[in-house]
Length: 139
Image 1 (cartoon, rainbow, N blue to C red):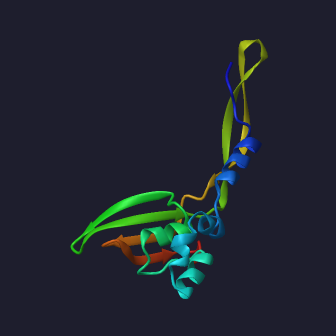
Image 2 (spheres, rainbow, N blue to C red):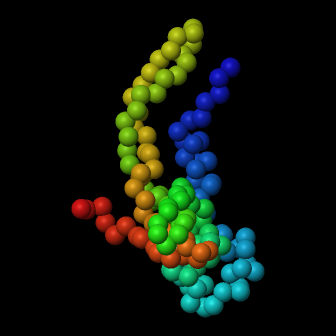
């Protein structure tokens, strides 16, 4: 017997995986309490700035959706990419098993994650060296 996940169940599963700065702070209060007031305010607001450590970025933004390695004359940098929680509609054909061993299909619109990074964080020598934030979708 094939097991399938309904779109509603998938949405509920993805929503359960979402975290907020407050939930991440609650899981690591010692690190948060060791920071200065200005840094704590930035983290609570979900913002990062140059000088932050990877642990501070994890508190503010959570785990990155994708990581890259970048080599420049200045050295090796680590890049963390965060994509918007926004979703874009994508029309897809879904195949499913029907009774009597036949296969049926239907066209559905699925909300896919936006493929454009909204925040890009670069680390050099263990701290944030640059932060890029998308300001709009217009060219």
